[in-house]
Each structure stands twice: as structure tokens, then as C-alpha cells.
Length: 202
Image (tube, rainbow, N blue to C red; front, side, top):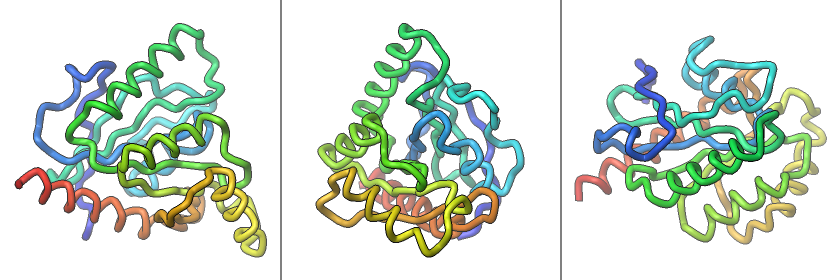
């Protein structure tokens, strides 16, 4: 399915401020420096849909983008070593938890992981939560242009073992530099939004 229009809708720091439209949502989560803004810009085919910053942790709100009226893509605040105070990190954590647990429109999540490194403790916690709560998710292994193709299987095995995943999940190496993985990720998002739309109509 072609992506004709992906436009910013609103930002929010509470569930009350989230869009009230009954549209399915796919969220994007990952560490502060994993390349989330670059990934969103790449799949959108836009240079500045999401702001790319040299300082990790600049996204401090939930940012909603409308995809052709079919659903919303949601840019979640990055977690990890953002240079912010403990109180702000705690606020992010509470808000993230509230959104993930209580937002009925949320039907899937793209979890970003740097393919070069072992997942962090927070990455592991996020994936464990997704599995426990049976929320469909897609693993996007970012910055794939930074490693050779010959080493990919080794890195993929290391990541999956670290996450202790007992079942297969959709997984794709992704590069915002080369566009690798763009089509596969778009296809998964399309499928998730369509499934969510059908579910909401029941």
C-alpha cells in the first residue's frame, strides 16, 4: 500500500491530550540514540518529519502522525542515557507506562535496537513487557550499514538470545542511510493498521 500522506497531528504528555479519533496506532520505541527520528523520516519519505538531534533524548512528548487517514504513527520518548534530570526521566517512565497499558487505540509497536550492540536492560524490559501483554511488535535492527553482511547473523543471534525470545517475531535490519528495510517495515505497519481497523469495527 502506498504512503501518500504522513502528517504531524499533535504532541501530548498525557492520555487526555492524545487524539480522540478512533484510529489504530503503531508506536515506535527505543533508546535515545538508536535512530528513531531518522527511521521515521526514512519510512515517511520526508527529510524533517521527525526532528533529528545530535543530543539524544530531545523527544519528550508523544508525537502523533496521521498516515493517510488510516491510523496514527506515534513517536515515543527515547529512553536510556538522555541528559535530563531524574525527575523528568521518572515522569517519562510514568507517562510511557500509562500510554502502553491504557491506550485502547494502540495495536502494535516497532521496537528499535542498534544492531551493533547487545540490548540494554531497558530494551529487555520493554520486549519482556510486549511479550507478556501480547502486544504485536516488530524488531527494527537499526544502523545496519555500520556492520558487514557477513556479521549480521552473529549480531542477530546475539540480540535474540539477549532478549530471551521464545517465539519468532518479525525482524528486519534497517538503515536510514541506504533505505534498507524501509519496504518491509512499511508493509508490517500497513498490516498492523489494517488489522487494528478491522478489530475496532467489531
